Amino acid sequence: MTPEARKPWPRLLLASLIFGVGAWLLFSFRDRYVVLLLAGALLAWQALPAEFKTRALLLTAAGCLLDLTAVSLGLYRFAGVGALPLWTATLWLSFSVWWLALLKDWRPSPRLLAVIGAIAGPLAYWVGMRLRALTPGVSLWLMLTALAPLWAILLALTPRLLPAEPVRGCG
Image (cartoon, rainbow, N blue to C red; front, side, top):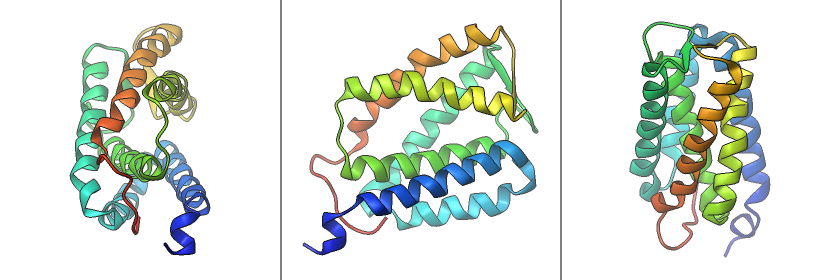
């Protein structure tokens, strides 16, 4: 086992920082830099181990479906063109790549993932609202309260996308 494989955390922290900056750019500038950020997300997806590529696309599709459902129910509306602008799908792809890369080396319980989802999911939408990337279609508290169980379920189910054994490799 290489020293790099035994210490995944510096790589994961760097990936988290890069994801955070990319998410902030997408929330802040939306369509302005979306092509550049989409190219970065696709490069990150390409660097995933082969076992994770389809799984990342499935998580991206599930996230886009979550947003489309919430938009169709009138919970919120995104800034940009259409019900699901390209910058939103790019954010989901970026999140999926980062999240699966994180779970590749860290296998928390589904209960912990549900708690993380119930807190972090609505928090991300609150930040997006503050950066004018979306506008609530209902009261802010109703929007955040509705998102909490959706995100809890989504993140609690993500370990099902992982192979049985932790996969080591680039990514």
